[in-house]
Length: 167
Length: 448
Ligand SMILES: Cc1ncc(COP(=O)(O)O)c(C=O)c1O
Image (cartoon, rainbow over all chains, first blue to last red; front, side, top):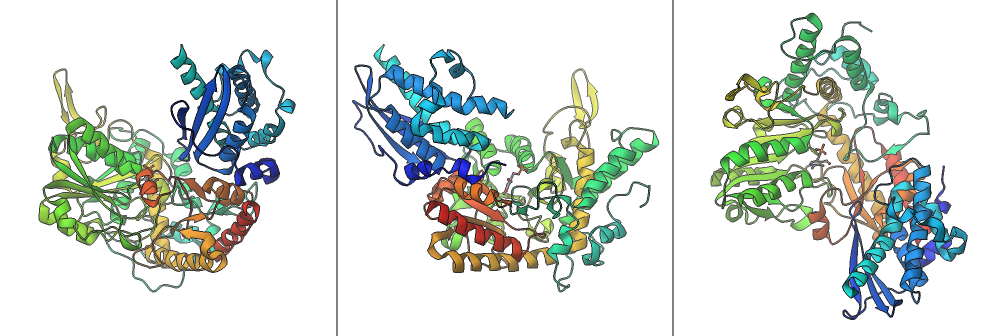
């Protein structure tokens, strides 16, 4: 059986206790996008500044459990300053780390599967995800996977909205 | 063990199944068993519940989630097995012996369940549904869509489970019915100070008997009295009351009353709607199909008599048999004793939480009170999200629920996204509470 230490790694608790990039950004120019986890009522708000194809600033607000909050905090640290294309690869890589295990576990993995799994050739190896790899243990707790992916799905939606607004 | 498939009304079966604690108190219609028996012994009762036994594969669990769904005594599981092994056939209209016997079992379960809640005419006024959610929807579709139109008023409360909110929100959308709400007042009780103005002009007041989040047991009397004065009918959601206290629907003075099998030691897949016969008589059918008709022609149909008019299709027969066995088990133990036990244990739990955790644990619910409070205990651990609380408790085999408990408007009113909820039942004891209180120390240590 998976132990608590698989879930609550020290780095995760650290991000939970002292979340990075917490706050809001003025809109416009920033873009604001909300995500909900209907299961537990968690809410996340991502503020996103995209300039010349680069995520120049990113802030997180909302409330949730240690997994959703620390995942959002780590995501903000990892995504800030990167190009949109790099961030998209990061999102896909993170979600694949969450979903490969989901299918191995034989759960239906509703919502997390699918489109992000193809084109996997450009995915980053979990070992090169840095701190984010600490969240890999979450897959042993299937009900918590949605907590970990909430902010990533929200960011992904935000990038889509920014791009469609530009085109 | 007798080979003859027996169900309900057999006190000997009950006494055997409840072991040393089964006192002889044959159930009678509407009669609340007398109080003053020896205290209930939860440890002895646990021996009747396979899932709660200490040699369960995977280890003993500390089950504190009965408000979501209760566990089953062996007698319920046996009654259902026995039914499937010896008597299964479709009910009604079968001419062969086992079909007749299946019908008899199904209909006698109806009567047993009806008597359990004091239904004056259980054979006609008890409608089996899938769960209490369906019972409420039946009223919202059949009665309300027939009786109510634009501008009519339905009064609800802000502490309702979604099961007693969404059907009325859908009605409001469909028909332009106006919804008004009783608010939460002092000590987590409903504020009824302005009840007469609120129900003025209303056609229906629909409210829960007990909150599945706060543990508040609603004082129905002033609400029912005000509704009567205003000429409104009352629907009460008994899902969180029927499993825990003696209930007499006639004495409550309500018009519709729903409850759900799986919270009262019965199986999933069966719920109950009770309503006064005069009301059921004039209500149009809900779902259409077999069983609910007396005659069908190509240009129309004639609905069946009560209660079958509201039971379209093959009903949950084994589930009814299981629910019959569940009410037998509860009656044999005695609802007064269940209530007394839970009240004492709730007071113990609230006391221990306060003394061990002080301000670090906040309980959302009334102070201990045998009348106005149930064994549902929702709480927050300072700076720890309910999901994380429940996760840590799980590693110690403690089952609690974390989330919004299907009461999002109430969560908004409390100003939290979710709570952790421990709920007590007849098989819980002080040791279970101690386990919870101790484990919360681990929670605080991990996240502190
Ligand atoms: C007060 C209350 N009403 C309604 C329900 C819904 O019960 P069911 O899902 O069995 O229909 C519940 C249970 O979750 C409840 O606690």
